[in-house]
Amino acid sequence: MGVLRRYKELLPVTPSTPDVNLEEGSTPLIPLPRVGARLGIQLYGKFEGCNPSGSFKDRGMVLAVAKALEEGKRALICASTGNTSASAAAYAASAGVPCFVLLPAGKVAMGKLAQALMYGATVIAVRGNFDRALELARAAAERAGLAMVNSVNPYRLIGQRTGAGEVCEALGERAPAGKGLRAPDWHAIPVGNAGNISAYWAGYQEYLKLGKIDKAPRMMGFQAAGAAPLVTGQPCPDPETVATAIRIGNPVSAHLARAAVQESGGEFNSVTDGEILSAQRLLASEGGVFAEPASCAPLAGLVKLKGLGKLPEGITVTMVLTGNGLKDPDTALSSLEQSGGARPIEIGDTEEELMRVLEGRR
Ligand code: F0G
Image (cartoon, rainbow, N blue to C red; front, top):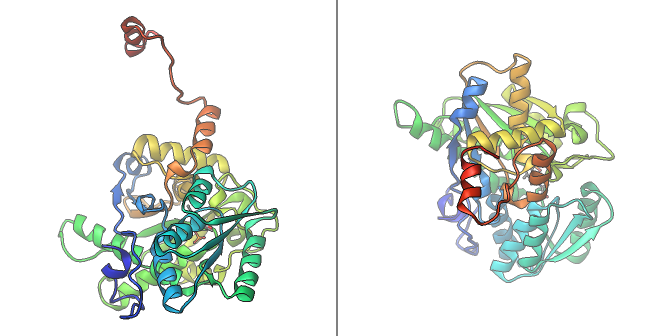
């Protein structure tokens, strides 16, 4: 069941809201026992890469697009570091409306670009960064009467709240008592435009108010060191990071994210590109989950905090693995290359050569 049907009680869905649906949401909360053991914690990954367009954006996009259609809008526009554009383009295709996406030229992972083009969006590569593309998209939406589906659209964050409830349900099922809902101790999440951390916090708050959980987690936001305005407290005019999804210097939801961290007793931290790529390899090779670089900033941060003696022993931590690793194979392959890691072993077509490899003789 997609997000609009599954959560109709929690969402502003009316009888006249079109039934937009790509069966998004209900993603797995994957236990990561080997990685958790290294860190001395109970670690889980909410694998949002299982959504239809391969990222968490689908949870909010479905609602934003449904409400845009309900309001009579006939075309969508967004700026994106890649995933929002893929998601918007997918729902536009499904609903049969045009979609315009503005991307920072040359700074979008190949899989995401291929998605937007395949879904049939008009892709506009802006010679400028994401922050500038977003300004342009907002101005154009206003001028041309298009539905703006970035997270400045309130329906996006309302839809994204649904992830928090799913985390609590899945943890509740695993709890020894085996019933009820349960929040993690820490909720670790990458922060770019700062919408998702704000949405998750709102989702946990909602469950707390409804009495479904008895405490909310500490919200731990992680940014890339080259694009860390929430850590430094200053907008970053020239953001740069290998985690292109979070290559953002002036997050629109910064105020909401700051409130989430403050109210929950959490923190913002930054991690280097090297730490992100090494966390990505760790998650894949010891967790069995391939997530894109931005999604691995939280794991990089947990490793770093562990090293600093700032990760409490035995706590339950959920990380949002925001996007699928298959979106950006180029970065993964060059990261393996640079770390002297795995690459294919080419052999001729004889059994003898194969046996030599299997027995470690070459
Ligand atoms: N992880 C991934 C994979 C993302 O694509 C994004 C944002 C984030 C984390 C950060 O989430 O912006 O809510 O703080 N991607 C946007 C995009 C900006 O255009 O696809 P946030």
